[in-house]
Image 1 (cartoon, rainbow, N blue to C red):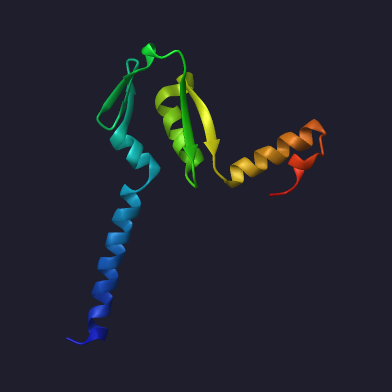
Image 2: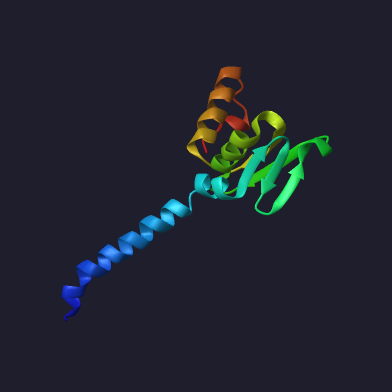
Length: 113
């Protein structure tokens, strides 16, 4: 077999591997596998946390998927968990500019990112 005759099969195999990786690497899939909140207990992988034992529960989410991860956790726990989201996304930028413009403040925080 020549290299050119193997190319379509190799492309198909590579595409299958890529599609599988993208499906299993998503935040929603990872949370479905590893995070569950039920009857006051938060399960993260093999660890269990009875949230009633804590006065306050805070989470910190950072990176490109910060907002997606925070939303996934909030979807599991509702308003029980607060925290910090440190990420740059168009949602963040549009909300910051909207809040600054609506307050009438044109200070340093209103500069475009």
